[in-house]
Length: 191
Image 1 (cartoon, rainbow, N blue to C red):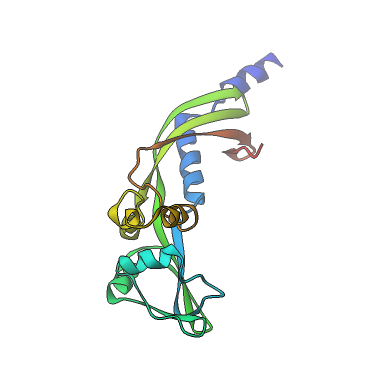
Image 2: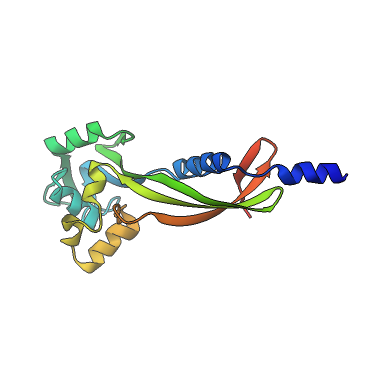
């Protein structure tokens, strides 16, 4: 019995395993993204007066028409079409005279795993740091850049809290996660 505990105690979460686990976790979180519609957009379905539409228009991606009868004509500009074509992962769904877009802005990139602390043979804490990696659209949504700063306080905070804006060029963020040993390797603890 003592041999079993000795062998199990030596089975630790290695730096490489922790790196793979964190990389998979960051990837699973998906990119920061903004959602918007084009076509004849009903303001009851989509709030076309919200700041993300204004930002997309200021960035030269969208052209907003005049709202009439509760509907706003919104179209992609030529520059907007070109930008969306060059960004991987853009999702486009057409329905009822509208096209809904999901535009990725930035992905999380692992900077490094700084520490792996074994709590016991089957539980560990992983301390790591990650940083945003924005694409061209993400640069427009960087909260430290002039385009976002040109909005008032309420609109800036709404862009950050609801529409994907963030400080994409900020220093790396330090985070910890709890890992648990599973039958097929290590996973993130849900405790």
